[in-house]
Length: 230
Image (cartoon, rainbow, N blue to C red; front, side):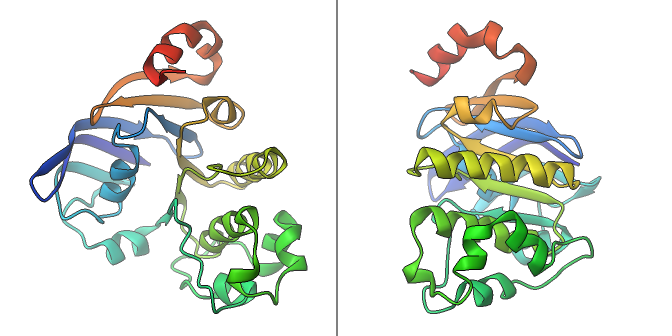
């Protein structure tokens, strides 16, 4: 579904990505692992066309997107859930959910979303500012499930959340995979990643330096600890 080859990205004079290569197959959950500053979030933003300058190749369903504007990439069927969540504080939960346009059939309706996220159903009329961090993260994920996008980019969805909320987000990711969505996940918590992902790409200094299938994770734990400094 997604193929990234020789991806380079810059912020001004700062060269952040140095020839990133990886792929995501349809129906997979794939993680980008790495220390802070490895280039994981920049990779996500580069896929979406949200960096000032990028070079290389990013193909989605066989179509090259490297020269497309970010809005056209989104309408092609890729949705980003950013680390900062981007919840509209003055809008209710339902209004936040209904805000993004539907770009293709196959998105989840409100009833299905509320079944996946019962916390949001209970807070449907609450303003974004009234939600806890965990509820905001659920809302940020739920919002892109409506759009019909088939490739979901989730940037650090468990960052700073209580263990019970992390478990709920894990259940949600496994459920949306069953429903046919494909997920690219940026994570520092590889223990969480191991509960949801099929494969893990390890990034360091703006490059992908290794790929570890989830079933081989236990055998590569020492190497992973070295990569991640944990």
